[in-house]
Length: 512
Ligand SMILES: [Zn+2]
View 1 (cartoon, protein in one colour):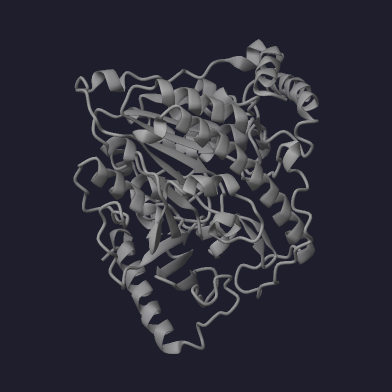
View 2 (cartoon, rainbow, N blue to C red; view 1 turned 180 degrees about the vertical axis):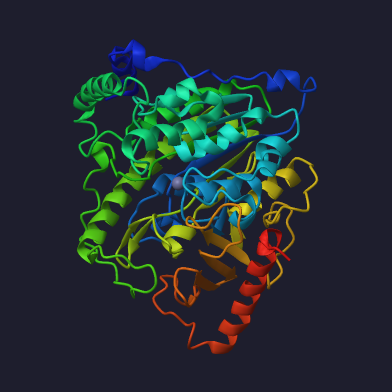
């Protein structure tokens, strides 16, 4: 279906008046209310964040399937970071680290739909950039919606997820916009037990009926184009193509300079590519089986291999849409005056019986994420092999826009963007703590600590004894060989550093 055909089709979608109660549209007057923006020659800043995009699966980073030929073209005009680490293994901590320049033990968005601690409402990219930036944000992902809702006071344009969707399953937040996350959970918990997608709090039968009619219609219409199903997460259906079209429209018409934060779901499951990407990787590749250690799950290897192939095909589709967007932005001249930051919030795993990212583990499939930054006018590629973290993004933005970097920031200005060469003993962290209380010391969590290529993983609080793994990613990028026991001296040294770090970050929660 061409773009025009699809648009025409969407206009013809049946509308259900009850279901279309509008979100109190948040096009705030923040920008106008700020000091009248002087004309500025500051560059725009455009974030393209793709959910669940693992660097371990990108041909750009050496993966053996050709999943990212379009991103690779973009890399030729960008700075490519090869050792970039996610803040955590799912959306809330990963995105919060990106936005706040801190680790999860500080910002505390550690649970599903987790929110950052109140003080971070004033400690993030939207609140700290110079006032003349016009701020716009959109996310397909409702967990990111919760975070953006916290930051809405600093957004000039905050577009609701459902506005770029074919259908979504939420209703209560239309009535209780000011309490978005509470409304989401109340609705979800009241009707379906909390763990599954929400349904309508009021008139739920009518709502479900309307939704089934609506979705049956577009599912039928789109079944040829999307043989594995219309892209969705739970009851939220969307076309990546529409979001890409909207972003393109936005960036050519927004007041400048702008900060645009766009967070799109693909290649998050379910893996539903457009038809031309279905079955493109029929290579029968059998990746090596990996040792099953702490946190392993029972999915058979053959199923994991099949799921991996489906993910890779969805990633190739996502890559094609990214390529389409970047080509169009280039034609419009946007690349000449805009920093474009292409990254992810976390990755995905198909190993040790684990499929997806709902896990206690922090293996590279989950924590190794892409980072590419195109500088305004950049025409050639740079490669950075220093270890970097999602928490480095905020201080880098502040540095580029001439703002002071507050002392609470845990990241550092990125190499080649003004950052000093990282000291060789720099530690970078990734944190999983879904089951830990938000306002309490970390006592049940997984922490990965990187010193360049040496990665130490500590699982603590799950059992009576802690579990540890250590890998040398330079020699063993697939984490096949746990060297925690064989490299005893180094393991003890790094374990002591990690213990001290956790002791320090727990201090505010400890009763002396
Ligand atoms: Zn995510």
